[in-house]
Length: 99
Image 1 (cartoon, helix red, strand yellow):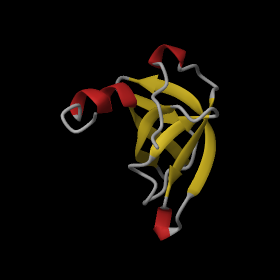
Image 2 (cartoon, rainbow, N blue to C red; image 1 turned 180 degrees about the vertical axis):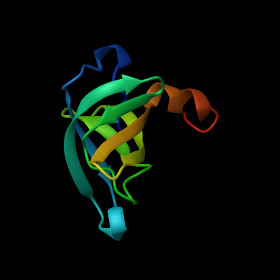
Image 3 (cartoon, helix red, strand yellow; image 1 turned 90 degrees about the vertical axis):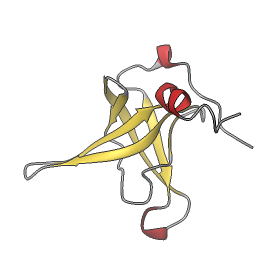
Image 4 (tube, helix red, strand yellow; image 1 turned 30 degrees about the vertical axis):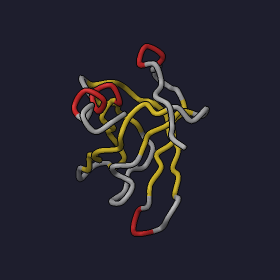
């Protein structure tokens, strides 16, 4: 089984998304948030991205992949800006490995 990609034209600010992964070896962890913005090849979200769920999918409520969880912005004043590489970029970069 596999997840299907979301049409990038349907990425709307405020849309619910879920970051899936295994932070700290805690398997099958899901955090929720919304799409806060798109910045070039990245989707900004407030879904928590921890070490271990980076590399996992960022999906919509219907299970469509919008991106791959990549990084989190941390400053002295706040924490919680997560970024996922848009799946269209992933497909371009790794097309030789994807069928």
